[in-house]
Length: 235
Image 1: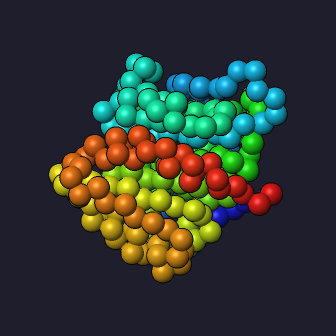
Image 2: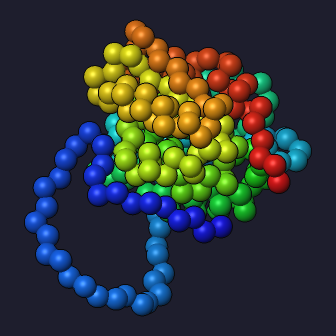
């Protein structure tokens, strides 16, 4: 499935870049082979017959690097006992000093589908902070892959708002802390307001007493998993 996305020159991410640029024109017509490397943890249920749902979790910037155990922090791994049916949980690790590469993530999920018995109609995506940004971006580029998404305390940008129609068929729940002083809750509020126009089912939860750690309130709620696992793609 080929998706045409709109591109805007200005991002709303919480940092700025200053570049000196020279305008050059040219044409590139060459086939590239892309090498991809990413580490991950996959929690896969044992002694289960048939295909299982897959929850993909994207961590925040503090868990980048090469210590895979870090990706379990602040994640659904911590609350597996709240999930009432067998599920697989996939948590890749973003390299140090990088942001999520959505092409690599997409290919990783496709590879996991090939290697394990995954119900492709029940693949879910969630992430916090930088991983929430990755959740928005990956779902924007491949909305057909996911049965539901849940960005948590996520930065957003104008490219996502410009392509808001990409999310109009997706079940989406957005979460943020009202006192977040790392990523302003306005990121989630503005995405919610834009998305509500094309997707009336979207919901926004603001935890009024939470700072940037709204992942605790989100992932510790059994109803979060009940909602997510109730969604299924029509295939």
